[in-house]
Image: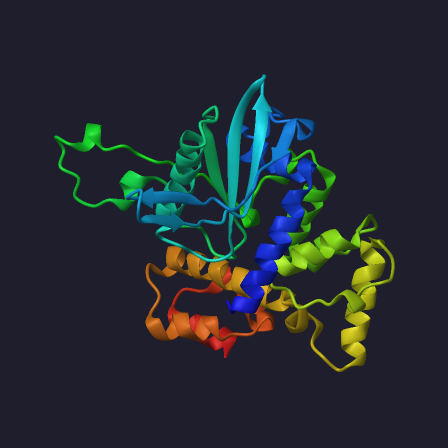
Length: 312
């Protein structure tokens, strides 16, 4: 992903989570499986600039860290500080960044002689591939001597993946819409998007930014609210008028093809045992039309030759 796209995604995340309702709902999803423990009205904004001074008194070194979103929340009358980091790409060292951010908040509280509140953090991941990076410090560390393992402090890194979130556990309407639309865009599912309901135009554009779907504001009907059925009809009609392939233009076709490819590869591995490299490559380059044809004939496949005959 280019820097421009990543910055747009980061800005969109910060804008979404400046909404107290969205922030509280996402935290409840991350920490409490959707139970409404944190209430929007009990959130307090905190400065994102986490500066602290370390080193000798006469030659201190200032360390600056910037968190994406930080808020103080009251839970049953007790305050905690919550930090959310947005990631649109993998970062195998993310646990060290979280550890650094959290430790800096603790140091700042100690240095300023404030009451020391506990700190909790998680990652809101909007990438299209499964998050596979370590989610604890000990998972990252290699070859910990067994005798020392109980004495090595651990650090957890909860990750909320936009692509696989269970939207049924969300109660905030804006966050729920952004998640549902994003997941339809990731899957390339036009039918799910084309339904007769009204949503905020900004929510639709947020989902498009998160999923890197190439839609511009001017592609949609005017107004702060749009009817999804009308919006998608208008969008596709515009692309057809310009002689473009509507699916490839906004990313749906690509998503459908990749999903179909992965499903077929798994099915063929079950039927044939393994897949040769030439066949895997051929499947990757095969059109959606041919993949659909292969799906219809999957039960008649007994060899790789059968597959090549169908998709060529």
